[in-house]
Length: 86
Image (cartoon, rainbow, N blue to C red; front, side, top):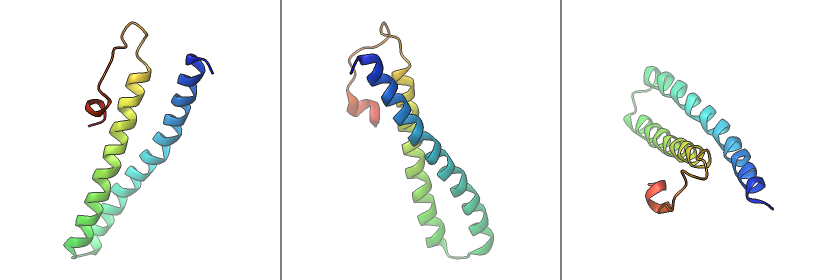
């Protein structure tokens, strides 16, 4: 597999992750609005906030990945992956 083929495969994979994560984030927002109106249980809302934050983290990782793979060869440099993903 060539580098270009690998990058195309990775971009397709990231795109397939991005769409369902975005849909989950939108539906969590709708659910949060509905639950705030219907429930008085703060624990329920707390758990929903935790899930929403985790989905946001995944969205940010995917977005950073897209930014990385769109860099031209001239812009690429060695990067500490732990720093990139944190």
